[in-house]
Length: 263
Image 1 (cartoon, one colour):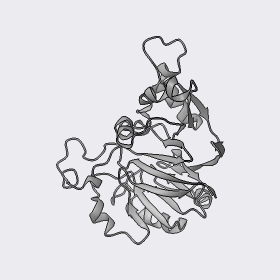
Image 2 (image 1 turned 45 degrees about the vertical axis):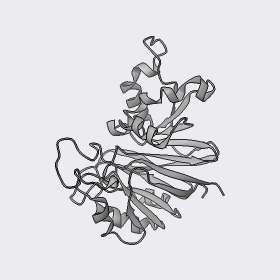
Image 3 (image 1 turned 180 degrees about the vertical axis):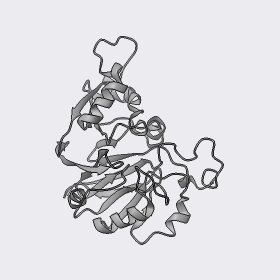
Image 4 (image 1 turned 180 degrees about the horizontal axis):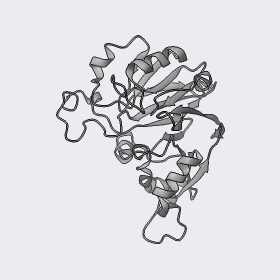
């Protein structure tokens, strides 16, 4: 059995919490769990370290968690709050750290196209103005092997007509930025022990799940532990936790949970 840990690097929505220009109770909260950076997670096992998404706060998250090397990055989709920290992989791709190999990035073809467009200079072999992140892009269309683990992309709907992916690894799944899960994807999550689910707020949103909707999904998945993530400033950590049933809790930046990485 391969055991590991997942660390929540960021649990916020795209604007972060506190949200700029806002003076609400949550944005003024003294509870450190109400201070949320953009969504990302890190998986560690047997000396390996893999990150899911590199948002605009990735450097801050990496400093906080002492990330000094990476084996790979898994991308869920190409929105700004999930990719804009890619350039911060530069120091983590120095030859003295990687031994001269490139940091592999895994993404769907659509997300890969976004990365190639937004970060054209990184993938331009003729770029000559300064050091670039040394990365290698791998397109994924289904399950794949990564450092001895089976990684399963899980399709989710981020709006009515926008399909992106979450990930299942062993008995753990990370599903952020969704408004709905297809029935086939719920079936792909059978037997997991730990799941992270998008739960933006209470009020409906066209591209994100609500607390009520994610509670229904959590009940269907049946994991022993569910954590809500991608949380906006309308949800106070402790007050929301008090309304949630056993086995469901709010995630927070720096949360660290042990996981079983083999099905």
